[in-house]
Amino acid sequence: MSELLGVAVLGAGHMGADHIRRIDQVVSGARVAAVADPDTGRAKDAVAGIDGASVHTEVSAALDAPGVRAVLIASPGPAHEEALLAAFERGLPVLCEKPLVPESAGALRVVEAETRLGRRLAQVGFMRRYDAEYMRLKSLLGSGRLGRPLMLHCTHRNVSSPPGFTSAMLVNSSVSHEIDAARWLLGQELTAVTVLRPRSASNAPEGLLDPQFVLFETADGALVDVEVFVNCGFGYQVQCEAVCEAGSARIGDEHAMVVTTAGGASEEVAQDYLVRFADAYDREVQAWVDATRAGRVTGPSVWDGYAASAVAEAGVRALENGGRVTVELAPRPGLYA
Image (cartoon, rainbow, N blue to C red; front, side):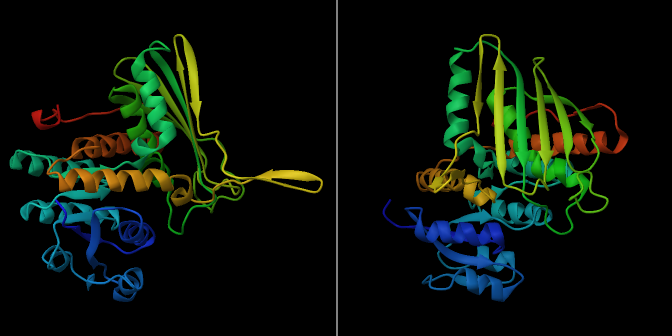
């Protein structure tokens, strides 16, 4: 197939604008055909210089725009369910940024809608599955060389939290990536969660419980702990160490640039997830475009998105009540076996 894949991008904010740039300048085989955002000025800025990209305020208008054959959803999470169902009605393949839908009930409705179609149309944007270090760790664990995994120790730090960031969002927004990564790396469902709350950092906004220590239990008896600290002040850091019966492996220690000057040296620390995971995003979107042009759907499924939302909801309950909360998942449809 030589024709470029026309993509409608829903959302032209920080993430959406980066995907628009990526499709236009980095990814091969695709073009930006339409953009939808309630802020018309922001959408026009995002597509400035891109020929043939129409701008819309309504999702339906973007999906029905000439040349659109696939959809990339980068709008806020609460808008995802409506956009996904609209894409399904039109038979359009979708790459949906996480969360699939913030509430597990809505995410399950998306699972049920896709199941009724009898085929997969959507991929969820858990980009860590496309990061070189995470892929190496997945391959190593899958080889059995280190024996059975016993524990995952994870770190997730941000320079600062955006306005309006809540204590619950440390779990259902930030830690949602660790939820999916743990399920994928271990090949197990997460069955219970406990959230511990140390004293809040002095630079955390008033009322924000930051940092938090999240402990997950898995179906096969492994443990996953996550230190999440979204106002650390110094950089964006993501690390993961797998401790197994015959060895351990850690990722996230690689550094970008080391600058040496008279009297000392300094290491560059990423300040943003779009910097740390730039290659992963590029690889993810390219894989989605390639698969879509070939008539296939690969990568994390809407079931993975639903499971992440369900685990995150249990984590928020654990944060609120201070106890251990079990994770309840609906039966997995055969489409995602």
